[in-house]
Length: 227
Image (tube, rainbow, N blue to C red):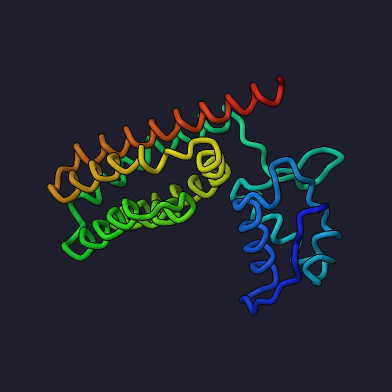
């Protein structure tokens, strides 16, 4: 594996968490490309740990959808497909607008002010990676406000599983932050107006638009690969 892994210089709660955190960062950052085989012994040697925390880290990243297991290859960095994308968004479009509807009646002045600050910051940044980190906080804040912990957990798992698609969107559609900004404004405006149905509709439209952008990037990538 030629991923440029570096030994850990952290003091995490567990070694498995440290390995998972660093592998996640490198996968999402593109240093470890999709399709890369992650050999347990190589990763253990690179991080100067035993194989046990590496197995635990792999299991965690598999639950998040960032790695899969293939016959004769073992752990492999997830390769996004249009079918996976569609299934992920089919479920998210059912859940996230529902959480947004609930949040519209529960967000107080402080929560709305926090969301406004995030949207304004997204509008100012020119760094796509920074934009998507702010985007994550924006969505997380809305779903937490719904006060539906089981739903929030399901949404978080689905969003973690779609992290590979976020990388595709950053790389494949550099204008996507500018496209998404008015959609975030529309979601926030509905929340500020305490209009649950409007907020849910704006969130659903936002997710459908993201899905279409990423599907177009994935399809273009597949065409490029096949010549």
